[in-house]
Image (cartoon, rainbow, N blue to C red; front, side, top):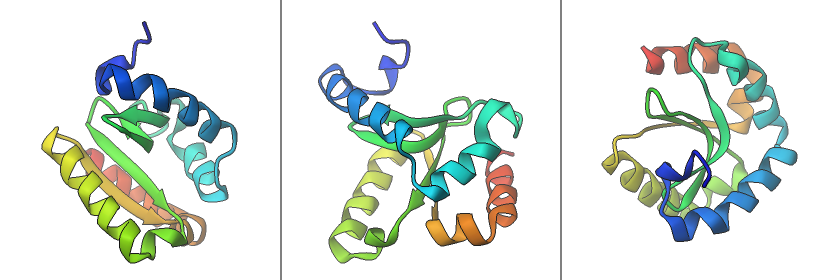
Amino acid sequence: MDRFFKTSSPDWYVLLKENARKNREKPTEAEYVLWQYLRNKQLGVKFLRQHVVLDYIADFICLEKLLIVEVDGGYHQELEQKFHDEERTIRLESKGYKIIRYTNEQVLMDTEKVIENIKEHLN
């Protein structure tokens, strides 16, 4: 059984694992840029990308610190998507996770500020 199974229920994990793998193969530009800073414990902790948690796929997660970093594209500004994002945040926070969100533009235009903010959340 997969070693990351513990972050999701068995029924959801199997279904979402393949989607997560596909997402890792084709990241958005902003996800790619941010991953270059998060990978290989560059911030002192291990991050995983496109990781199944509950019945969601987190863009980036540090299991050690229970920190989830989401990179949101423009559709996250739509009312229905905002509702789903809020619901997702509430469910994940109820399990002890801290969720921080950045827009694609923030990651691409102010990368250093995003990295500094993530460091603050890690400490």
